[in-house]
Length: 371
Image (cartoon, rainbow, N blue to C red; front, side, top):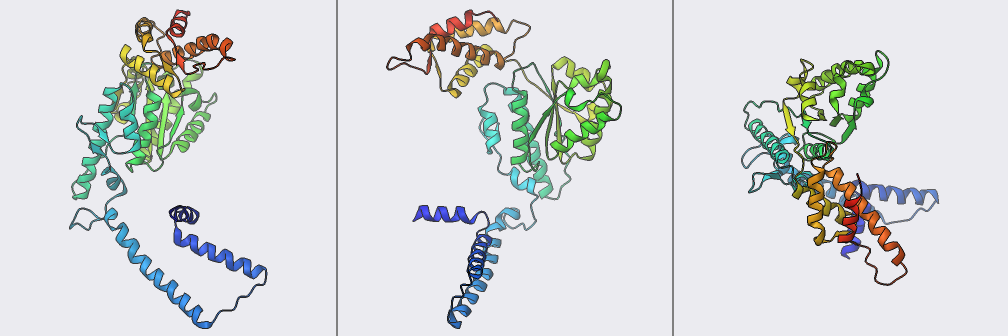
């Protein structure tokens, strides 16, 4: 019976009253189409009409009573709460002063490393909560700048955090959609005068009510070759950030030194990007944990005996100029899978072949390969 009730509620959809009306309308329409005219006593028709009117009259106060706690303030206060304020109350601060309470915040908290990033976003969410509380009490509330600079080397999760940042702002009611639109210099700049503004506006429209993530944004400030049109893209972007500040969040990302030069390249950029979050390179322990996590996501396990070899591999990789952080860990896992496949392919006809374990020998062979 419970399964039938769940199925019936799913069939009716999010608005059950409308769903029932649609079902009744469909049945009546089918009967009319086949010229089926059932006969009922008049009293039954009157009883049905009275029942429908009674249900409609009861449904209204029931809905008001159910939604009332969500739209009023604290006990004794009958001031309507803004959507953002109501949503921000779902975020809570745990013992380590980290904000949790929504799916995106919890996912950010589970990410490996990135302690500075987590602390900065937690501080921002707490600031949003305080400003929302001030508005509830009728106090002046200062606007909070949500635009950010993500400064760090490749492979440290800047794009992943940007996607979670948009989801966090959506969950907290700050942005309506919170989706991420990722682009770069090539996605904003055209090769002809006047076309760059059109191309940039198209990306801005796509990102409205969400986050526009511009990777390697410092390329826009270059004055060489076709990049000379980058200034047109910056000017268009600055105007949109001002005109649509309640519906658009812009994140620019790139290497720390280059991003500092980018922000100082235009007088309007420092006032728009007041918050810079620095992404540090992963240390060896973090990279080891990332490698194990990547293996688990692929249904594999790394032999514990191989941890020391993996650590030495990452320690040497961190000294290379092209070190890719998590990308280096992903490359190692892919190489280990290749060496595992070479070892297991001749054994596939045998019974009890362990297809899940990456052994010490697999790791040795993977780390011995030249980059």
